[in-house]
Image 1 (spheres, rainbow, N blue to C red):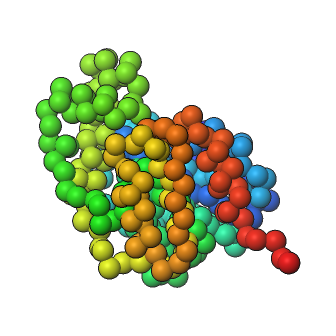
Image 2 (image 1 turned 90 degrees about the horizontal axis):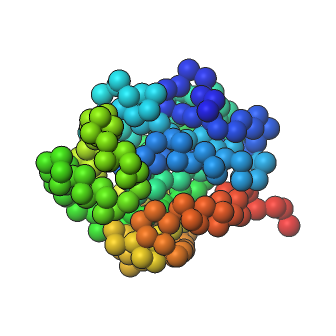
Image 3 (image 1 turned 90 degrees about the vertical axis):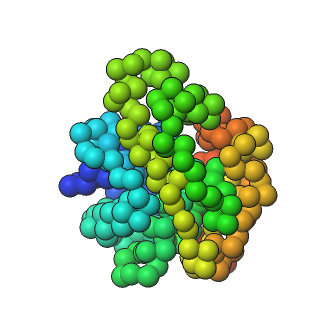
Length: 255
């Protein structure tokens, strides 16, 4: 998977130098940039996908994972401001589960600074800020923590069954759960860009009512789409998700 120049944070699965809009995708807790690779070639040619690689996984396995939301959002925002890939392009952000909160925090920072202002924020599989509460799941022992990962899905059973792979994978996943479990969003904060929210109709972690609360996190327009599936509805609904992004990420044609 090609990497954005001089950036350990960004992956560029399908380079499109002529694209006019960048879709920056942020994965869930325990996820990695490769989660979004299948989407890259399904997007319209005007859109180029960049996927975020958090520290502590895959080719960043030897790096210490971050354990605080502010530190993660600050570091990623700084990387966005440094990358030459954005140029004069429009920028939209997409985050799933933990990635939704990270994307919102990054959007807030970009809107307060001198960098590119996001034109749209997509949040998926994550309750709105007023329904996000502290949790100490990250403190569980290895067996209980692994059982929780099995319950939620999204992590290969084969990897969880392998003691050596668990030793490699669990520190980064546990760090992500610490980010989520200790995160306290600013309930007065608002982005000015529109927010589009998505969730699965059988997601026990992000019900439609709680995901609808993202409307309170923007001063712009808001919409909610509920699709069939559980917390990882994105896998079976990938084509529908990409179609939704392609329909709204680009500017409206002139009348």
